[in-house]
Length: 103
Length: 466
Image (cartoon, rainbow over all chains, first blue to last red; front, side, top):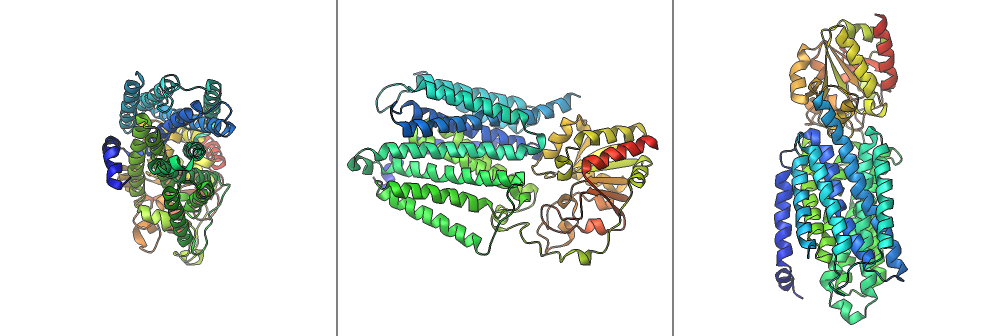
């Protein structure tokens, strides 16, 4: 498969990637430095979406394929840690901003 | 069929969530919106995903749900229990988990492919390429995040040797070479695992030489790496929510990295190859700096009690000592005596941008008492006493005056404009950047050594007796 074929075959995905890069840059462009840490933490939780890949990989593994089951199980745990821990930590950081303002 | 619209809703929630996270008023709801979108996408995947190869849904629910439950419990506990001072480590740790997850997916998918016969596997070069890229980026992100975690924790020191940069680049070239060879000829499992190990090594080498002061920037960069690794997963499964979420974080994370560098007035390239803090030779040692003077607790207390205006400059020392509450108490006592007290917050004080705001908010310090750098710099000339609590590099005048200094050009809090400066530090050791601070040797500066919490408690006690 040549490079051109690859591009033709995956043109939708390539368009999505390009547009998403611009969306990602534009939406956080004006963030105040106070929010840098919570924003990083929130983005950190969002890339935990990789856990979906681990669910797919373990969900379609044969029940006797212990290599896939074992590593997949570990992947689901780690991915969930990323998602849940990430969102909870971010919420804790932001909770404090809110308290501060209402007082 | 419902899976596609749900994925679309989730992708929109990620975009809106990130957008809302970048404004103080909406930030918290933004985080919740993204979390809701994530939960939706995860459960929709479990129950509605159809494997395009077999046309069947997912099974092994026992494994999936035990993993989800275990991860949720541990993640929630860890995130709830962590001290506010340890937030940066925590973010780094969670980021590493995401990277490891991406790498594991690649490991399993490659094993799955390599069990097919050679003819079919060589027809799937595109697939192999995506799997290998996911493996490399995921592993680098995992190893790098773990080293960053250890460094912020103080478990791992700075570690660099001559030629380290060259070795790193060499390692990267070897990894790329092996990856190309594997894609051209996919049936080489040994090569695949060698790439895995070398990527872990590269991730570690990537972070090892970088000084602690630059760690936030590195974590932000590794964060965007993990985003890209997640996006490769999306590519692999044609899964749009993974793709959009991953690319979004990859792009936003890269921009955020650059913004953080700008706040510190450093270039990204400098951060990555500069070995900041590793070799502190530029300022010539203490002997040229002259002598400093110490102040007693009671003198410091009297100075502040009879001042009209006091500005507190919190830094990392306040954070490690967990002194934010007693600091608030000190502020209250001074205010009762009619002293005007505010806090000057440098954008990168502490170890993360915004770190000090979060800490002081935890101690119920009112929002309008926190002054940003520009405003504080206007106020210093009208200030009688500046109390610096464990901040060092952010008040180092070398950033303005000494072009050879590694922090030259970084905007600083110009505390030396105030009538007098009291510096609380544990010792005369240099700060994170590893450079001397001429401020401490100026005639208007006096030093108050000790742990920030203990010193503040004693100051409070002293003030009560005046």
